[in-house]
Length: 503
Image 1 (cartoon, one colour):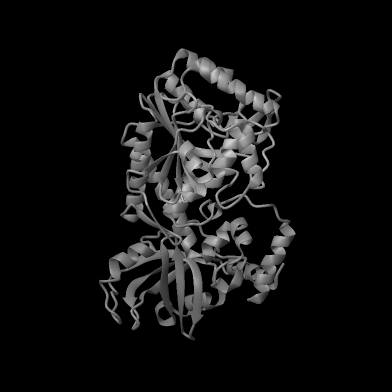
Image 2: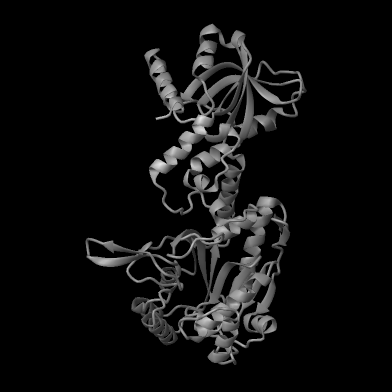
C-alpha cells in the first residue's frame, strides 16, 4: 500500500473518531454546473455577487489551491466544472480547519453558497457551508492532468471519466443517439421487444459465436450473434412493426471498428421491401444527426460527412467490376482466385461467396459519403429475398460510410423452401470448416411455413453510428467498457502506485 493511501485511510479514521461520517447517505443537490452557468453567467458582471441567491451544489474536487485563510477549488459533476471559493470568515474556524486538513482532490463534497464572478470574469460559488460526501482513498494519476495511457483508460474507465472531461460528453451523446432512434421509431408505431440472448441455435448472421453450457439441460448454448430470426418469428405471429435494441456477441477480432460485444438495433416492417427500408434508414439517421448537431453535416476527423437524404445508391456487382475488373456473377472461381492471389490474398474455402466477400473488402473503403451498396449475390445473403429481376442476386443493401458498414438490410426471405435450401448451403459450408456459417434452424423454417407477409428488415450498428455522431475514431472510445486483454491485477497496482509516487 502506498504512503498516500495510508495517509488517506488514517484521515478517514480521524474523521470518524471526531464524530463525522466520511460517507454520509444523502445530499440535497439543487443545481448542476450547467444549470448554474446557464442561470447566472450572463446575469452577473465581473466583480459582482448575488448574496441573496443561496443554493446547493455537489461534485468531485478536481483542483485545490489554498491561500492561507482561503482556497479556490474546482468541482466537477456530470455536466461540467465549477469554481468554488472557500473563506475562513464565511465557514468559521472549525469548519475551515477541517477543510484544510481533510479535503483533497478526488473527494466528493457538497457546498452551499451564492454565485459571484471574479475580477477575471469566472463564475464562482462563494461557499457558506460544505459537507464531505465521500473521502477518496486512492489519489488520481498524473496530478489531474488527464489519464493518457489508453490501455489503462479502457480498463479503468472510471478514472478515464474523472481525468478526461470529454469522455462523459461522448457517452452522453451516445445515449442521445439511442434516445432519438427510439423516438423516431416509436412515433412511427414500431414496438420495442426483447428476444433471447442465450440460444440453442445461433443464426441471423455469419459470425463465429461464443459458446457456453446450460447445466439444467446439459446442452451447449450460444450467445446471440443477431436478433433477426426471433424478430421475424414475431412478424409471423402478427406483429407488423417491431424492433430490438440490444447487445450482440461475436467471437471475432478487436480493432478500431470491431468489439466482440456490441450494440445493434434491428427492425422489421411488414408489407415493405428494401426500397422502403432504404428510405427509412436515411431519414432515421438524418433525424438523429439533426437532433444532436442541428444539421445533417457532421465533422469526422478531417472529413465532413453529410447524412442528408437521399443517399447515393450503387450496385455491388458494377462497383467491384469498375474498380477491380472482376465480374462477381460471370467470372469463374478460378478467375477470382487468381486475382486475389495477385493481391496476396488466399481464400481457404473455395466457394464463390467467400471470394465475393474478399473482393468487396478491397473496394469498401472507397466509399466516404453515406452510400447504399445494393443487390448482393445470393451466396453471401442467406436470409435475403431473391431479386425480382435477377435470381442470382438478392434485394439487399448495406450502408457504407467512410469505408465502414453502418447498416445491413433486406427484402426478407419468406419462402420457406428457399430458406431451407439456403440453410442447407450454410450447413455444407460449416462442414467444410467455415466457423462463421449459420446453423440449420428448422424451427425458423417451420415458422415461415405458417406464413410471413412481405417484410423489410434493417440492422444498424449503434456503436459505429455513435462514432460518427461524436467524432470518435475508434469503437473503444464509444463503448464505456470495451473488451481488453486481461492484465494481472498486481501489474495494474504497480502502475497506479508509480503514478502516485510521482505526486
